Image: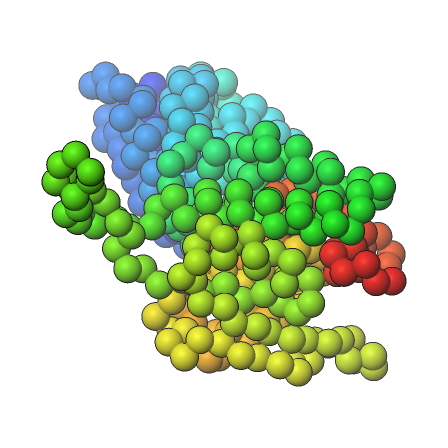
Length: 364
């Protein structure tokens, strides 16, 4: 594990103790200073450096120390992807990892007992995130964070939950058991279109010359980035038209899977993809991400045929499915309109919306 650490002058002595403690345990520690307690320095300068290092993945975790720990935690939490917990007890340290998946720990030297601080560090370093019901809550924080950003998908392996009011309104409508097949089908197309509108906001542009009825001018056009959508049969088909209406030049592939009744493993029965799949950004479409088995197998199929940059677009996801995808495919972004609570004993997402395929096509 690689750990970034930093302090201001008021936290210097405790920081030095923590560095020695961690290095004695063979932890790779990157020290961002400060180098003395005699010269005053500003805690935001150190906190932001350490937080950016952790958020970018250059370090796995980070520790920040100042007089109280408060200033460091406030500054660090301004960095997207930094989740800093100010901990005053061993229990705080443990819970901040188990339930909140904190990746930065803030401590205050003036709190007193350095042995207590080292024990907090030990427990915080050794405790893993429990996931399960806590995953949904932490993903909501990340979703809000992404909503404030102008950039989607810059890092791989992210989960983005779209909280746009129109998306959430339409998701409520498809959840409703009274929604007709016609309405359900139209709503799925509309939600898919709204989601991909946001997902593609960072497509590159190039300047071109055009002539309006009034004058010649410079304008912008997409810079030729190739896209492909790959629905998982059959329910994924319901998302295609909403996306094609928005991006008519996107190529369309298809992946078909069924579940072996004995092994319960997904089995490929159909795969037809664009010939230049390796040059395209791929959106795999599946309305429901439940266990994640079929989606993971579909991504495997697409990768084996040369695809490199793949994202999974779904309407409703369960934490179990998200964990499965990121365990099998840590390079794949997941975009969804809702992250629900859990799977029931029959493998349905709760509260979910039922079987998306049946509701799209009017079957049972």
